[in-house]
Image (cartoon, rainbow, N blue to C red):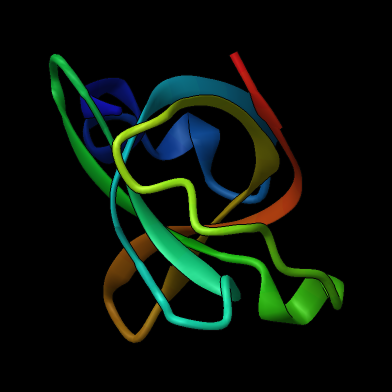
Length: 82
């Protein structure tokens, strides 16, 4: 996660991250993914899907890194339990 915030080369690129879900929307349309280096917001709504309540679970997330109003986040295109 830290590398994504430190390097603009990841902007508009598809990446896969592994980490733990620390906070999730009630309907599963967004969540925060945290690894040992930091935390990033994952938005699933633009991809038209949601996940079950997986707070505390380790997942793999595939998605596109974007800058939204100065904030770096990911548009998730796939999430699976690790």
